[in-house]
Image (cartoon, rainbow, N blue to C red):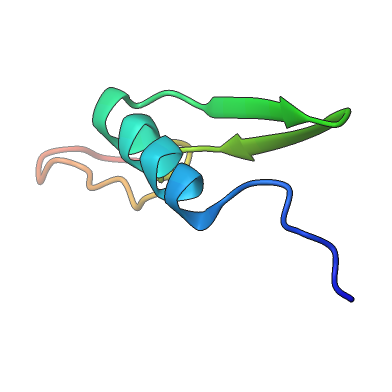
Amino acid sequence: MTASALIKESDLHRMAKVAKRDGVRVEIEVDGKIIRVSPDIPVVHKSSKVELPDDFAL
C-alpha cells in the first residue's frame, strides 16, 4: 500500500493562485511538515551593463 499524500493537488493549486495573485508566500503545516508555495519573483539584483553618456570621459 502507498501512503496518502500530505496535501491534495487541488489545495496546492489554490495556494499557488493566492501566492501569484497577492505576491506572497503561502505555507501550510501538516503533521509537523511545512509546505510552502512562493510566487515567481523576477531577479532584482541581476547585474546589467551600464551605458555611459556620449560626452562622458574616463
